[in-house]
Length: 266
Image 1 (cartoon, rainbow, N blue to C red):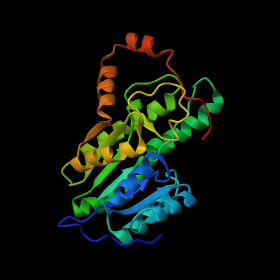
Image 2 (cartoon, rainbow, N blue to C red):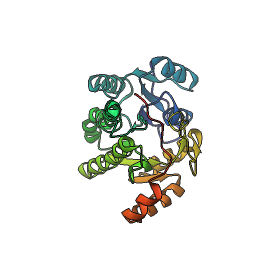
Image 3 (cartoon, rainbow, N blue to C red):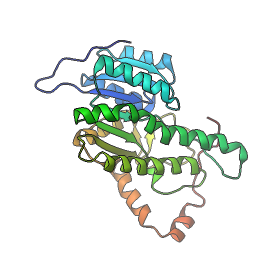
């Protein structure tokens, strides 16, 4: 779909936002939140039909791009097209992510390990790469990566997901320091449990669970404040800090028999 940048609201123009993983879950909720604020959106996901249906349901006019974050050329083309028509975005949100249970001793799980790292880590790099220099030239903009509290410590049966989110947190920190002083902010958001299709199959209790519609405005407030790294909800931030402090022997004993996400393919 084509789009036009919305008119200014008062003295402040509504933001231009480029968002991956937009067809469901957190991405869809963020799209609805920003559209309600008058934003121009570039919506990216693999499922074209769902993207078009989402865009048609939103106020305003928006761009949709059916692309996989594993495809650098497709993301580059989407980013170029979006910037040509809507301008350099104010906010780029790398939200695309996948999760499935994995076991290192099961050789058939290796493709899932590879896919999770490719999407959750390198997908961020491919999403941000086209925008870094244009944002630097303008000396403004925010690159926002959606990581996870699962990146704080490794959990049984989730080695690929936990390690990928830990890598994402560290990558975003490196990029933040790299771009310091350029006018471009790099922000890390670590969600706790959010009620999405990804978490719906979890066969264990999920404390402090938020709906995607509850989470989206909280994420947006973090972005607007320019916070470098935040856990949402804050209660999971407290839990994450406590988990960091646990000695390995205590952590291992406490979590060895923790519930595990079902294994599967991607």
